[in-house]
Length: 122
Image (cartoon, rainbow, N blue to C red):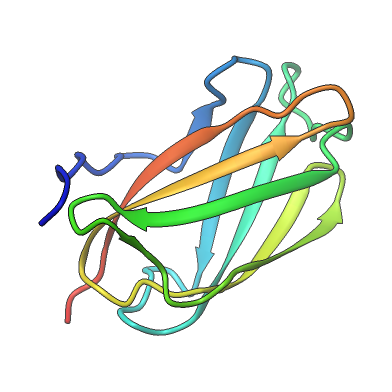
């Protein structure tokens, strides 16, 4: 193993590290299947709790810190509405905690949020 295993998060919504937005994800199917492709819907919310319409892009990266590697697939992000994104092509090919970094972007700023997602049984 090359890194430490983070504790899994208990929720699916977090504030960005800079505090401008809240990010919420929902996997489909739920629960996340082992070694199968799944989709995530990601909502970026503004300070009023509504959709953050100014967020026009979403970056994503998923790694397994305890093993020092990422996913074998390349996710594709599609904006489906104001502050709403669909991420296709997610696949957790190993059981354990995955660190999923979501980076909402507006014309003025890029922020980030990291979710530690416990995945799957073999």
